[in-house]
Structure formats: C-alpha cells, structure tokens
Length: 131
Image 1: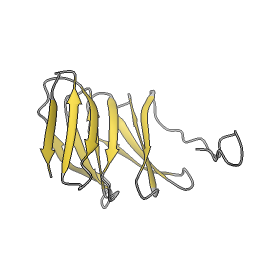
Image 2: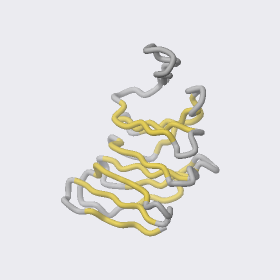
Image 3: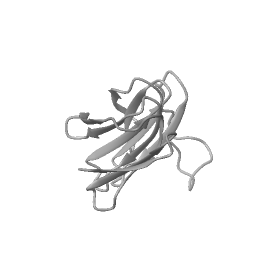
Image 4: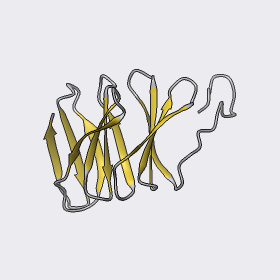
C-alpha cells in the first residue's frame, strides 16, 4: 500500500500469503482490500491502514481472481479448482459454492446491479450466475 501523491515508498507491507499473490482489489467503498493467492486463500485487509482482518479459506487450488459486489457486501473468487465462491463481509464466511465450470476459472465479475456474477475459464465458457 502506498500514497503516490506523497512518496514513491510504500506506506505498509501486507504480508501473510504463503505463495504468490495474483490479484488484489479495493472494495468499491474503499473499506477493504482483498488479495487472492496461489496458496488457495483470500485475505481481507483494512483499506485505509493495510491491517490484516481475516483469511478466507475454501478453495482447494490456486485463487486466480476476485471481484467485489458494487455495495462491498460480498465478493466472489474464481479458482483453479473449477469453482466460484461467494463470500459475505457480514460474517466473513462463504455463502455459496458454485461448481459448474469443467476447468480452471480465470475471470470473475459482478454485474452493476449486484444480482449476477459472470465467470470465464479454461473450458472456453462464460457463465452467468444469478444471485
């Protein structure tokens, strides 16, 4: 985490993942940062201080991408394990496990209305999931 208007040096280092981090994203409200890693986990950090909040576990293989819902209440993760996981920030636990792809999931995103999730993967499919 760093403030490019003040310095070229980082403000804080957020450590904890045991393997490469492949995706990091601020929540739309700026309250959180989520990171996804080849260590099969997601980590949630405070979006203002970088302080660690919680680790989310549920995937059985590398996490490739994560995306926040527009209201910052949920996030979705896609993995090499062929599943999507939907997580709620209220309890910081998994809400839904969404199997359905035949291979690794490389891309996930929420619709602007927060009602749907799109996913794409190695199986050459784009799937739409309704909340």
